Length: 351
Image 1 (cartoon, rainbow, N blue to C red):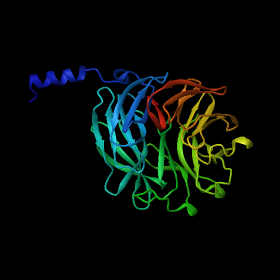
Image 2 (cartoon, helix red, strand yellow):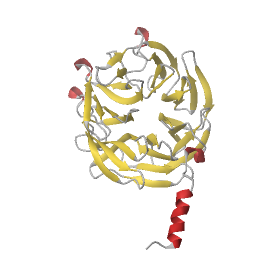
Image 3 (cartoon, helix red, strand yellow):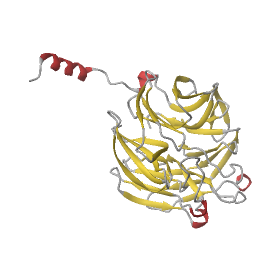
Image 4 (cartoon, rainbow, N blue to C red):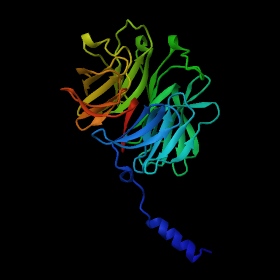
């Protein structure tokens, strides 16, 4: 029989306010970086101001922000075996996630729309077969997995209707030193899964681009834009941006002729805003902007540009020297400077 004390405790729990991102300062972005010898996850506002910083045990790659609760999941640089659920109000580690034996996290994850499910990109260490790990988010326990339908999955994005797009990079790597083992016959793809994990569509690149590893994704109005990294002959100018609407063939978008080698075959991050797509290259020291139909617009140069995310009708970009920039069709304009070497990505909060 329920006691009066138990009843009152339950009633009090029901009336407690649910923590939100406002309790963590209402950050607009999450970004991993390195300060001195320490690895840190930052929360940033739209002007690039740091709202909080949380320590990481090793180099971070990307993060996933819970849609409503002030929780961030920080993923190790791939291939890694840690993912930390961080309470961004207190700085405490709420949960530590570890993949099953013989698996490795692969740098990215995404929440379901209601935040009840976390999906993580993973590989079977031997062979790099792709998996999507499934975690409930009350206690962050693992409840299952899906086949990613490819080798080496990296980024994951949830479409507005709940379907999932996976960037299967196609590269088999040594589980210890990340040596690339299958470049002559790698086969990247984009996989579309239903909200319950069923394969709905699969898109591959033309045969002559089978060494163009599909890495990162950004949502468009009809599907995704995707960023690629070329593993073939460095003398070949290849497109590093693609657009995909499920049910159609991917559209590949080439830079202007005099900019074809600017990115040195390496696109690091991607974002969509204001009818444009932004593509960064830390190797090439550049951010390229394209129209949403894939036509080339402009290139801005800055050493070690890596992270990029929507900022109004333009973009925020980060560099390895601590700079944060606004990028639009007209210019690359400084926003803020932090004493941190920013890592690969800027992750919007609440998206």
